[in-house]
Length: 113
Image (cartoon, rainbow, N blue to C red; front, side):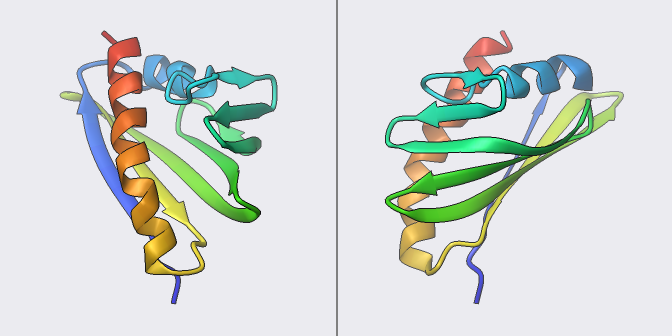
């Protein structure tokens, strides 16, 4: 079983602007420095990017490495960001990330205002 965290949010902005905020690490507490990022006791690196459509990063916390996929879809209403955080070893590890994702999305939303 591969527990997955999934979140979707739409902003009335072009995809390029949302992508830039993601790439700059506006969702992480310490931002993104070149190809790496840090968020509290988690860290990771950029694995793949396709501006302004998608960004894939690794996420390592307490020796457990997972993947985060950011997918952006632009429409007349703005840009919808879908976050898929995968490769958790179990549901408890995934569930521990949920409050952190709430904080990350608040930080990203603040940066996009």
